[in-house]
Image (cartoon, rainbow, N blue to C red):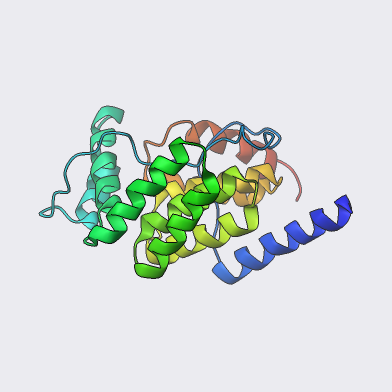
Length: 213
């Protein structure tokens, strides 16, 4: 039974990644998946965000992120990018998003997922709803659904370093170090100031490219 489950999950991963043509990214320590209820969270927006500055579009901000002279400056730019991703012109979507956060804070993950389902039906172009739902599926060890939502995020915004990070973390946890390395490199190409990624790239480069594959 366990073998059949492992095969089914592996097949699901292959199908999602194959149709998406995506590679992984972000860094956390390589370790076995934690038990349910103690999962690491995928990267999310910081608690405090600046107001959305409509005079600075994402292309400008991503350029500024790459050119940031230090980590402190990069964090300010990164927060502005998150603010744009989180902003929605729909009052209904914003309200449902707030309720989803409240449900997560109360550990009512199933309710939060249903609220995010409603947001995605209402505004399928709202990237952060897909990203948040991917996070919750990941917390439930539902890697297939998490990867499917990450795919939707990256179709809409290939530079979404949070989603790339989650993809990389999942690939690490299922033992696909080559895809994880590819992901980390993509993440650094977008945001050179991501924490821990350079160390992960160095370690995985030695393991993946320092031996015959």
